[in-house]
View 1 (cartoon, one colour):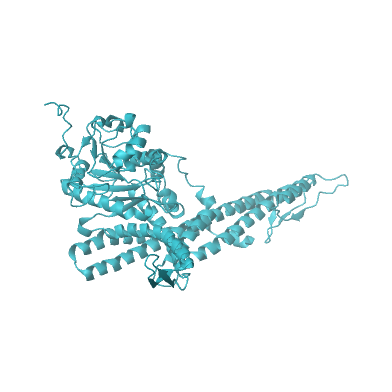
View 2 (cartoon, rainbow, N blue to C red):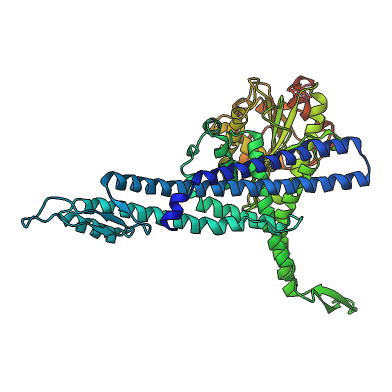
Length: 601
């Protein structure tokens, strides 16, 4: 970039353009929310039938397209803001150099060199030290040599000119580098010229996000930084202190970080995590599509099979070794996509039979994956339930866990007497992968306990209004062990705890679970073998577990069987849990305590 161009540049114009893109992003966000929260809900309420559902699906796709527009415009706005910031810094350098040159009586030439006049003390022969012209130097060593040479000149204007020229050269270098860095990145943000937002489009957006966040480090680092290892309350205070422009920049560049910050409003976390979900799904789907094209042919070969006992022979088709290896990788690639598809399906189900909108409060596809999904807004709910699943829980199977909390929401909503309800599936920890190999170890529970406590505290920090929500923790299987570990090592921050199929909660009594006396509930169905098997690894003193009378939990009557049917729609135990969720625990039927005199005749 030359001197004349930099002098004429107005960095504020790029910031104004960024404002325009942010405004477009906000409009797209509002349109997306209107479609998801109002239009599709109204269509489902008033229209029935296959054609109506097809229409709802088409409208939902429009909403996703608006989401893509919102994300891209947010990135462009942040990129332009960062470009403006870097140009402004270069322009300030140039303006400073030009001001110093004017004050010192120096002449700045069109090529950026600086001419200084004769000046200084006359020599013995009566001559005034001559003037000259210097060029700016940006290399550190060369610049130091140039300044040293200027210091030896009896004309003091030489050093002033060299300093001005160096500053001008540095400004031009910074502006040129900013232009060369941002021009290709802004060009890359141009969308395909079609009406379809494909997996590849979202994969490109993921790449664009990484590019903008990396290239924009100078600008982004100038923003108020989030508290290091901040508490939910500190996170909430930091977010409230940001300007709207700063919030948009963080959401565009650091959606993955913002989405996991406990204490931030549910709608903010949802906005961030939906972007991460869409980008992650795009990358995963594009990779799967590429892999599908590599399927070996033929997939099967005919092989003669012989019955060793009868000698009977027949021909059967069996997979080739190449296809077996290909299919193993195919299944690996498909698993996280199944989970992401289930989450998207929950988004799309808003309005079905009164189901509220969903909020994605945490999402990651790394390793086994993690996700936190709320039915209804917990920031405003009168009653909130947080469900912690157990062993073998992962992103691929998140659909089943979400269905359980949908069922709880429906029952609790019926019992809430007009109050609002939010039920949350919290898969925010690395659950054991295997009942036999992993579940006996306690580190999964203790490793996940701090994250769970922070999430629970975050529900308070992001709360709207002064009235607290009545909060219930519902945990299943190894999830109860995590909840117990969380209470044992810190504050649980809940009003009620429901434990289902618990193998033990590390503590020995209900009094140690950090909820008011009489507000620990346990359910154990006939045929659920996990509690007795697990007590030897996760029970408290004397291997006591919540189903033992001495633990002190309220033992709910249970009409389900086995380890995983506590949340089936047709079971009374689901109704009993819902009563606890809405603060009607006194209406829950309990198993009578064992009669200590039963053996006396």
